[in-house]
Image (cartoon, rainbow over all chains, first blue to last red; front, top):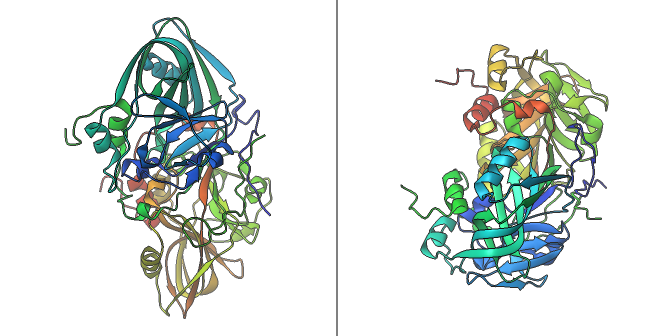
Length: 261
Length: 261
């Protein structure tokens, strides 16, 4: 019997610096972008692959944050709820978070400053789990309204039902991944963060922030990416050959212009 | 300790039909296309992830076939050699092959007929390991000449040093994968086969064939794709943002026209 294990290994790999677990992901981002909003993976199964991660819920009913082994749903009204292990997801990304590097961002740093610092310090060919802990003077977050079948494409749904939260003076943690360009279609290149306030009352997909004082960023290099493929029949009805990178950018940045502009 | 194991699991998944192990792969195809011809994975480590697979060797010294747990190198002179476990690879793809479906192709079937039959029978969103066993009336195969640093891009190297073998009346097996479009950049979408003759004297990357009598095709649906990322510093020197799909097509089909045409 052969097994390939994604748990902590390769503590000091050929690159010299230590790296951690692999990223486990269920399904691919192109399916979510194309409107496949239901999946068969449960939160319980997701947690077997890590204690730290992000994702979506079936019907697109909220944003998922997996933090310190607990899964939370951030609903489109901005409220946060701990979720039971039987809840299912169309897309999720998780790892066992054991950071090996800490970066301090100066007071007033923004999401763009964080992106610039990661681009400056990290290897463009590698993949990383990222945690940014604040106090934040301002945090712009978003969560999706549940969709009704037949589902539209993700960018169209988000544009038609914008739910963005402008949080101020919030303490909490941004959780997510910094991934290389060649993972486009499979996942989101660049930085993808979800926010969870420490009081577990606010959160969402991060569109922007400004730190209030020093921000601590913790980083773990991932050893790989383990994709579990969804077997939902809807995946065979969409055009998987289309390059949806433009969609990714619109969805990530909250750009609500129609695709043609 | 969390572990995510890629061994046989999910024997009857939510899609209804059985599926097998995950595809394990070392590094991504975009790195090979860009001229990263060296890696740190040994054949011995590759075999821990499966008994069936394909790949390349460091310096691009031949094509790799992993068949029934034994690794072979097909050199640019067309000769085949069993390789020791310490040999290293820049890119390789392997799984534990346990086919669940058999397709018979009629006498005289070609590579294009096989591709059409797989497209007709298999789900476009899923990933498969494929084995095609012949007698073949004709088999066109290729193997690369070793490259010297600084390495050129893969398509340029293959175009400058063409080594194509026109085999006739050959018995053997084509080994490889049939992968969905969203794995472009990570792996090769569509069919990617390497050939190993039963006498272990001929083989190579399959560019075309014509069956001599009935061909038996054995298929296993893969549960996922586990990418182990290479840490070679060369990966950080190449442009990983470029879309190299055109290159993939040129390399796969043996098209030797310059990229501009």
